[in-house]
Image (cartoon, rainbow, N blue to C red; front, side):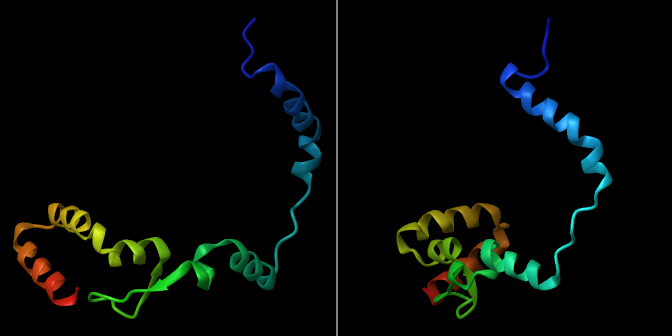
Length: 106
């Protein structure tokens, strides 16, 4: 006989099925605004100031960006790879402008 789930999961599925009516009848407690803010500050990278770095070059100089993006933009060893990636995505008319901008700011 075919079982839709592996045997080791069936015990958990039975527990879920046995408590489904009780769980559906209760409304989970809503978080307050302060509790939501605390969770966001603890776990969400957009709320963690240590997850951002200041961009030191280019037209966005002085702005904050996620660490990985700021590192990629400022890493000269990756400059060629980034330039190639961006240039292949840019229309031909924007290519000369972008190259001039890169030479001026880096």
